[in-house]
Image (cartoon, rainbow, N blue to C red; front, side, top):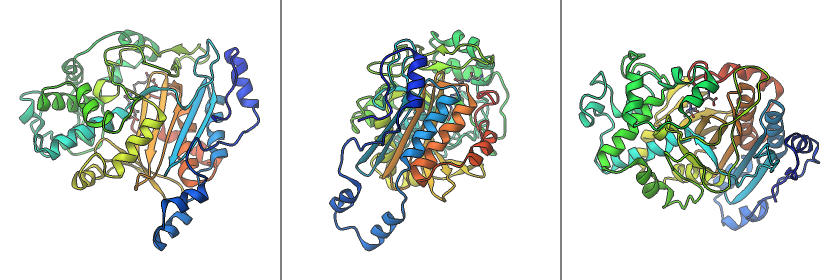
Length: 423
Ligand code: REX
């Protein structure tokens, strides 16, 4: 079913085997063959049929090549799952566990990092829909005295325009020592905000986009204040249970990933130093900004449901898509990213980076085609850039040109705190 898998063995032999493996086609895991799928969907209008006819099929061979490039750049394993209107493609290369040589699988859970921000945003926007929070109200009106400027609004937090500094810049200045110092720590949300407030605001509230984990820690505080419950309970009752996301867990401060999962391997700053198994951690430094555990199926389901309008009323889904420019090909909405691809298609979702895991989870405007692509390493800009090619393969239906990849390093730092990803 999952092609490109390798048998048990040493990590090295598994990686070599996967690189040498006969390229097997990705097989739809379930659902009808494409021609039938369109027929079964039933009597599309002429316009819809025309739109479908022009929508390129995913380039599965290209996707496999993207994953292999990630392995060649240093990831022990990489995998991706595309959910295309009922048709599923699964591709996996390399290992989930370097010690046992177990092949990575698209059924593996992983740490989804900042994709958590999209979950936090949905919960907060639902509270807006219920009249419990107002998007343009001052954060301090709900959390008196918390922030140094009353002009910072809820919307500024969700769109990274508050100016609040990102406490992770300093925390992870030195990658492995920074990680080991917090791996087992348990922070309160307030402690994380306090770390940020040691630094002045980076810009006037609302004036500029400046990515900061602090924004979504404060979003977590707002959720807890408005509901009187933990963010974990709100994620569970508002998103995880209704969408039956059985692989999605917010276990903070537990350090273990429940169930079947890929290990994560952090790349040290020192060239040639061995990867560090970073699987176990409290992820307390991230919490409502990045502590979610999920699977490719669940993230595809989540973003698909969001853009099909199943989580938010139409007016709030519109608000979520008010884009602040990030660079010439990216925008940030309210807890979601927009990426404009080379073929003219824009896709919507989020990226994630926690120690040992890189994630891309994106969907189309209509929510009908989604991809989640994961590599089980981090702090490796070459792997991050290679994995960006998964979006081109999934949505543009063609193999990313090497030139496109070599042009990409400029975007590694695009809105990740300075020094977060290596060159
Ligand atoms: C923390 C350090 C990165 C990672 C970070 N992660 O801010 C948040 C996230 C939760 O997912 N953000 C991404 C570490 C970028 C997003 O929004 O897409 N790097 C690593 C270092 C660098 O320690 N010195 O690469 O694992």
